Image (cartoon, rainbow, N blue to C red; front, side):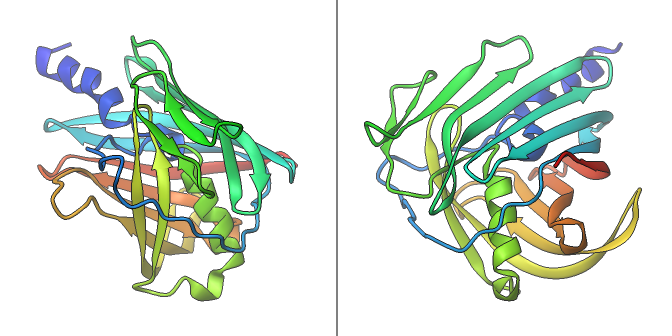
Length: 260
């Protein structure tokens, strides 16, 4: 293995570490504790429990990298759990995440978010409902719980549940704000609806709702595109993460197995 290829593989877990679907939302600088903290209560409709498998194609430092992501989504109407596992060629398992908690009037109400990267100790983010605050094992920061807060693994599924219940409101240009916690701190995330597009997956062509999350205007971090398929329970069928230097990570749904 060449030194440059090895370096690209080693850097992949960091680029995959902010934990959206299958652990793929990339790390980005976060807003200060006094930044926006949206509290929005919206109708939601949880998708059926399922196990989803994704193929990963990436270009990192000019090199092509392949991998696989597995997502296990489980809900029982009163509680939920999402676990993800990401594997890269030659390295094997490079990232594991989990989000679990209850279902409340806002939708997903996380209790604990755990991230385990390659060769690192796991980090835990706790949503302490008794003390009404979010705390972290990786930092001394804390944030108040005001309602509707999410973590970086659960947020995709919170948006899926909201999209399922608000399909008519998913109009091009509409924006959806959330307060999202990562391994060390939290910030407002804004998703913008681009529109409906035809995309191709190994399962065939499907119409999907394209949503986009850009970093804040003063942040040159990674951009994220997500495509949700209404005909497939609004599960994410494609994701793409693009760096300012042109490197990217693309994730396409290979298969879905409903588990309830």
